[in-house]
Image: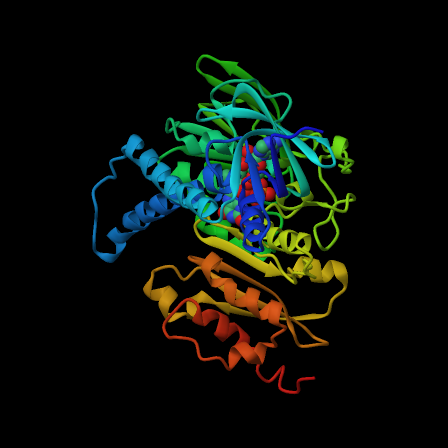
Length: 475
Ligand code: FAD
């Protein structure tokens, strides 16, 4: 059929998956078109996810740390919050990064088409062009003909059906807009995203309740880590209601009236100024006309792929949140490179031994490879060493010695198979354990590596050293 534009590689969606795929494809010599409905590149992660949340968490962490300094002999006055400036800081951070991406796309001659894409058939995508800050349709359409395609259309927040449409009810995107600092907020869902936003708002002075249906927060992490986080964060929250559900929300003039049910439900309905829904994310698989291209989408909206990120249609690949858990930017980026390389005929496979998870809360919680819960479920015989930060000179000097570093190894092979850290900077510190797992290190490799003293990173070496004597007779 007729097309306005032709390319070797079409990438649908410009999040971390999509832009990484487009850049790699262009670097490998393919004529590449990148279709994105929003005004800027970067997707959820850069615009309304990873990056703006960290810009705010940075500011609130510094504020919290300053409050704690009175104990060490330096007292500051009460913080004055200029919400416009704070929002401006976050926008500047995002703008720097999305602007950088636009420059990188241009340098690689990746053609971007702004609009909502829908497959017409296995080789054509129709784009309903959009303009403005959001995705306002211009009324014009463009058809792109492609040889190969990578679907990277991402995911969006799940909405609970019984919650009314009200400006005081937000998802993570709305919470990051930071239009007001509510007095009292309910966070529905005790996963990483909910708890990061709760950290930001509580530091700004909001009183917060968290409600979670399951019997724990951050359910992917081992409980010993979460216990440390909970101990530090008890004063931050009014109530953390586990094994409890919200059953009804009424929008009233004086607030949102919420009813609860479950083990820790308050007897009376509670009144909030703001509700954050953070109960998970759902893939955009059902919104791209995948059926016209013959691409199979499951009932939840996920697209299945093989280890080269190929869908059931040989020349169409899929990556990132739209193919499944864990929905994380670094996973999307690595899948993107595999997909672009495989499309270019290379023998690339996605074969990660570990994908790290980090909650950028205070303290941070980070884990990689197998958790203890997974080892137990899979019947893996594992050894573990835990180095408490109460024995770390640097953590004590920082006044933050509540954390620990944990290393897990396989008792048969002696290889490190998992690691976890709770404490300040845990997200930065976990990388050494990611590398150890990926390279098949044994604990002695790390224990005998000289780490700089006094650092938090030393705790990884110290934990590994605890295995010495256990792992002397290596296979
Ligand atoms: P997305 O980033 O979702 O990008 C998909 C893009 O496709 C979007 O720009 C969308 O507009 C576009 N699109 C969709 N359909 C169409 C269409 N039909 N036509 C045109 N364009 C379309 N992950 C981390 O690793 N670390 C973090 O710290 C972290 N923090 C987060 C905080 C929050 C508040 C949220 C919500 C998420 C966070 N994540 C984090 C998750 C991370 O943002 C996602 O895993 C990541 O963005 C997924 O990348 P992606 O490329 O698959 O899709």
